[in-house]
Amino acid sequence: MSEEILTLEFDENEPVRLDHFLTEELTDYSRSRLQSFIKDGRVRIDGEPAKKYGQMLVPGQMITVLIPEDKVSGLIPENIPLNILYEDEQSIVINKPAGMVVHPAAGHETGTLVNAVLAHCDDLKGFGGEIRPGVVHRLDRDTSGIIVMAKNEKAHIFLQQQFKDRTINKRYLALVDGAPPTAAGRVEAPIGRDPIRRQQMAILTPDKGREAVTEYRTVKSFSKHTLIEAHPLTGRTHQIRVHMAFLKCPIVGDVLYGRRKQTIPLDRHFLHAYRLTILLPGHEEPMTFEAPLPDELSNVLEELK
Image 1 (cartoon, one colour):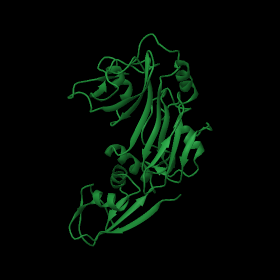
Image 2: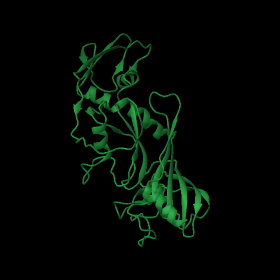
Image 3: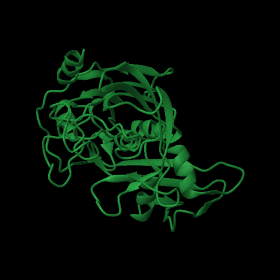
C-alpha cells in the first residue's frame, strides 16, 4: 500500500475546527490519529500546512490530507490454534483459553492472542499506523471465554464506543467459595490500584477508586460453593474477582484475591466469559455469542454434584 492523498472541501456555513471536521469526514481514523497527521505536517489548507488542531476552517477552503503508508508491526505472527466463534472482514470473535495473555507485554512478548490473530488474519488493515489487530477489551490471562478484536481502525473505534457507552452485555460464570450474602444482588464498590500491593486491585474510597458495578445471580448452590452468573456493568481490571472477594466469597482458584488454601485443586481460577452481546461493524442488529465452559471447569461441577 502506498501513501494516499485525500482532498476535501469545507462547505459548511459556519467555521469549524480542523480536527472536528476531519473526524467527521475521515471516519476510518481516530481523532488522535488525525491529530498526529496535523502535527506531522500531513494536512494542508489551501496548500499551506495546517498550524494547529483547533485551526478554524472557513467556507470554500480545500483541505489536503496525506495518509501515510501502514507499516508492518514489530509483533511476531505465531501459528497458534484459535477457537473462532465468528469472523468477517471487520472483526473476529474468539473463545480464548485460560493461560493465554491477550496482548504482548513485558514477560509475555510471544504466545499471546494478538500474536495468534496476526498469523491467522490476512486481511488486517492499518491500526494506529501499523498492521495489527485492535484490542477492544481484555480478559485476564487465566480467565477463559469470549473476546472480540477489530481488524481495522474504523471497526476498533466503533466497537470501543460500545464499551464506553456500556451498550454491550457481558456475562461470566464463576464458581465461588461459600455463597454471596444474597442469592442475587448488585455490588457498587469503587476499584483502583492497591496502594501497597501494586500488582493487585482493591476496593477504594470513591475519591481514589473508579466506579465499578457488578450484578450477579445464583445459578446453582453446592454444599460449600456457589456457581454464579456475573454481569459487570463497568470494565475495571479484575472487577469480578475483586467484588466477589469483597463479598467474602472469592472465586475458586484465585490465588491473588482468593483463599490461601485452595478448596478445589485447579490450575486456574474458575471464571469464564460465556456470553457476549454486541453490535458488530457492518451489522444492523446486535449478535449474541456463547462459549461453553471448558472441560477443566465443567469437570469441577460434575465432581461437586
